[in-house]
Structure formats: structure tokens, C-alpha cells
Image (cartoon, rainbow, N blue to C red; front, side):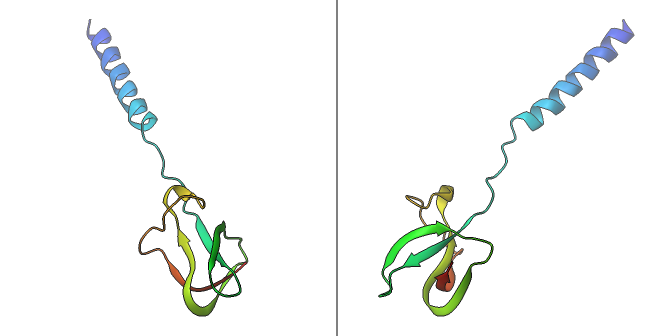
Length: 88
């Protein structure tokens, strides 16, 4: 009888540990998007940054994080903007 109780407690512990990790969804990775502009400075689109991008000294937003990592409809997350001119 004692062995059965120990086995049940062990099974309950294992099930609890597995379920604690099974429902833990990871955060999506942080993605930076560059603000592509026309020669006159007007906004064209957001594009995912490459490892070799740079931000030249200029006014405006160079890169930012967007909600849901969505360059088409995602809004800029406040406080993530880096100023300058995006150069891919």
C-alpha cells in the first residue's frame, strides 16, 4: 500500500512538472525593422534589418521594433526607436 502511494505521488509530481513547461509559450524573438524612405524623406515601408545595416546621422527614425513583428500593420513599440537614416 505504501509503495502505491509513493508511485502515485511520483506520477503526480512528474505530471505537474511536465504541464508547467507544456503551457509556457516563449516570447517571439526581437526583430528590428529599418524605416525605408524616399529621397525626399517620406516614408515608404518597413523592412527587416540585415546584419550589415547602419544608421547615418539624420533626423527621423532609423530602426524600431514593431508590434507582432509585422512590417505591414504592426505599430512601432514606444521606446524602441533609434534615430538616424536607415542604410541597408
